[in-house]
Length: 433
Image 1: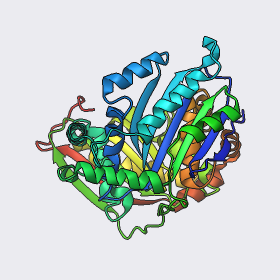
Image 2: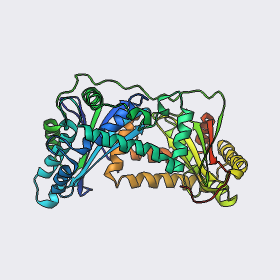
Image 3: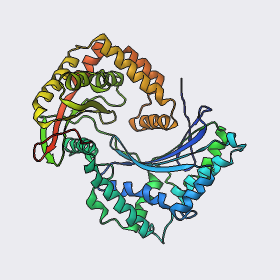
Image 4: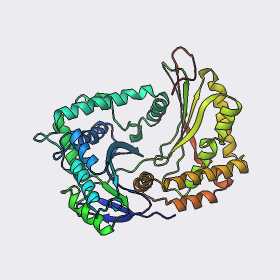
């Protein structure tokens, strides 16, 4: 079951993590560029990957780049912006066929690495600036993406609650930044910003595939971004100790059919905390599965919710309960939710709830071993959190959790913010997402 990455530091300071595995028929390559989540930098950071993906010097437009990827037996390149704790992470991922199925001696892997290295390390520029039309196109698209969050009411309500709950913390910054910031971003400014972070900020390269370690290291040394600072900057740790003076209640109105109730909690249990496994089980018993307390009591028995579940942000030490309800049922739904929180904290947990939750969590963990993307994501979470949680360690820890552990971690949890998004007219229905 053990899945281990071999660690190397390239000569330019880039960290290389390689997992030799014959389990997958593809080779997966991922590059992550980290920066502190900051309100004045989030839009710049979000814009960079999408502009780079438009084209580079060797493949100067999207179509040319896609044709090159297609020639690599249908390789796929994707970019994304991740928010992990109080970090914004620029993500570049490339998946390609494994050469052993094509009588290849490593050429496909080297060519795929070269394409990714070209996109990241040899961008298309006009003088000392990114190409203006590419920047403008991507600025417009990201603004649409931010505004489009309003069309996904459940996602909007969750993001809105967290931004209000953490309004004076870096975590309150949306991963794509603010709409108004895109208006003033200039092409030269964006290029200078990228040059600075690619030279100074933490950069992690992942490779998973049935490859020779020497080949992987030598290829990475030859291709990935050349000149970087001799000393990588240290990012600011995520803060998890924000006190709760009083519970905030915020009610907002939009044109929605179904009210969204979001309750935010501070768990005061960080990613490195040995009580992490107990926190996972606690959250799972409350709202992680169809057998969980909230689902059974609020939705199935009382019929007050279209959906209800919990979600953890383990790096920030937050837990959120999300529910889709009729606004008129808010008080009753809230009372039942509070009762389940109190019962769980008091150890009123049946053997069925405890055992089914443990098995559900273990099944989720085991399923992640079948996905190279999940393997990379799990290890990256450990880098951000300052502590790796191997799957076998998490499983062993989950199996050992008892009611006393759950009660202990529950006593740490403090309710911080209650957010209700409802219709301007007070109407409700079942059609909202």
